Image (cartoon, rainbow, N blue to C red):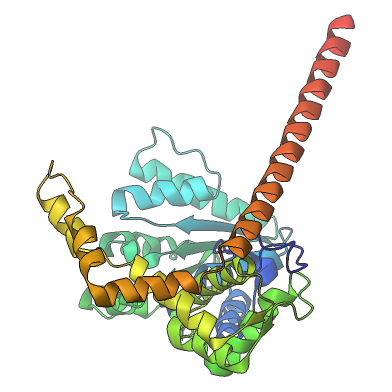
Amino acid sequence: MYEAYFGLRGKPFQLNPDPSFFYGSRGHRRAMAYLEYGLHQNEGFIVVTGEVGAGKTLLVRSLLEKLDPGKIVAANLVSTQIDADDILRLVAASFGIPSKHLSKSDLLLAIEAFLVSTTASGKRALLIVDEAQNLTQRAVEELRMLSNFQLEDHALLQSFLVGQPEFRSIMQSPEMVQLRQRVIASYHLGPLDVAETQAYVEHRLGCVGWKGNPAFEAEALKGIFDHSQGIPRRINALCDRIMLAAFLSDKHQISAELVEQVATEMSEEQVVPAARQTEAAVPGQLHSGGDLLRLLADPEASRTLAGLGAGYDTTRFEDRLALLERTLSTTLNALSQLIGAAEQRIDGEGKEVASK
C-alpha cells in the first residue's frame, strides 16, 4: 500500500514471522546461542520463554532455516490445549509417522522405530514445541517419557519447549521435578531496550531497501519504544500504522507528534465506548442520535469540531485516496492477467494431452 510511495521493495513491518527479517538483539542472540548449544548436546530439553510478541516464533523459524536437513530431522509442533491422549499423535504427525487407528502402545512403538531408523541413518531427531504453556502437565510428562528412548548410550530425541512466561510456573510445580532434571538450558527472552528498538526499526526497513525515506526523528523512535515497551510485535503493529499515516498525510518525516497521534488512535480502538456497551447489554435498542445532537448543541464541542475541520486538508486526503484506489486497481488487473494466463496454459496443456 505505502511501499511504492516510500520506494520500498516490500512491507517492512508485517506481523507474520519471517526469518529473513530476524534481528539479532542481545537477548535474541543469547536465546539462539542456547538453542544451538542444545543442538550440540543432542539430549535433554531446552526451554525458552518470553512475553507475547517477544519474537519466540521468529526465533524458532530462524533456527529451522539454519538446520541441515541432511543431518537433522526437525518437527515443529504448535500446541493448543493438548492433553496426554493427543500429544503423541501430534508428535507422530509432525514427523510424518502414520498413526491412524493405533493404540497408545503401538503408537509408542511406531515413534521409537522411526527414531531408531533416523539415528541409524546418521541423522538426529529434533522436536520443537511452540506455545508450550498450553500443554497440560500430563502432556508434558508424555514428552519427558519420549526422551527416555535411547539407542545404546545415545538419546533418540531432543526437544525444545518454547512458551510464554507462565510456562516457567508450570515447570516449577512439584509434578515437573523429573522434567526439570532433564532441562540442560533455560532462557527468558525479554523486551528490547531503547537503542535496540531504534536498531530494530532501521533493520526491518533496511530489509526492504529503505534509503532514509521516510526519515525517523530521534524523538519519534523514543516514542515508538515508549508505546511498544520494546516488544517486537507491538513495534511492528505501531510502525505499520505510522507508515500508513505518513503515506495518507503525504509526509516523508516521521515526527514524535505523528507517533503520538497514531498510538492514541490505536489505543482508542481497543476501548469499547460506553454507548456500545449499553446497546450490547440491551438487544434491539435503537440508537436515536440524541448524543450527536447534544454534542452539536454544546458550544465548546462545536468550537473544537470547527477547529478540527479548519485544519483538515480534504483535497490532500482525497488525492491520497485516489492514489490508493489506482494502486489497488493496478494490483487487481495484474492478478486478473496472471489468472487468465494460467487458465490459458492449463487449457493448452489439456488439449495437447487430448491430442496425444
